[in-house]
Image (cartoon, rainbow, N blue to C red; front, side, top):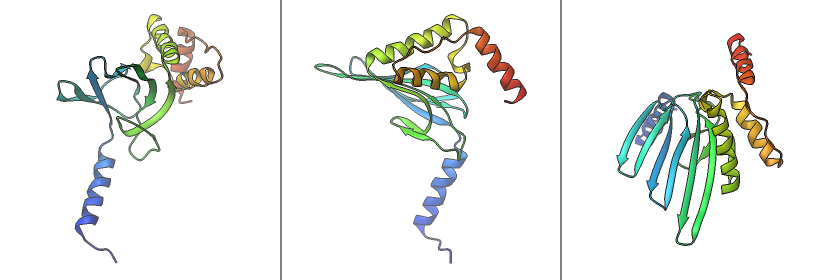
Length: 173
């Protein structure tokens, strides 16, 4: 027996909204010297400005982006974190993260300024060879995460590796 109650209709609307909304939203905040949430890289599919300090940026499924969070109080830095994520398709499994709705596939997650700085240097190194970090395969960001977790130096991303990735993607591997 199916009941048509206001609660059932509302639940149905929520699930329909979730499935029809295939974008991943990231809320960015900038309060000078207090809270700074920003993107290091990623191709935005849309943007909504909430007020002068907050905006919501949307990413299409499959997009890779880096989300940096920094926060301080009167005594200094209390949070430094970078997360590199892949926006997921509707219905695909995902991990949740504050300020990211609904969530995403977390490829790299580090906390603490020394580690965040190392990841930013790795991103800068990819930029320096003329490759957009959003075009780098997700496996490379997982590689950096795992090597840092094991306290090892990650391998550099090279144009040769990128060409091999593009060939694999073209043949469907």
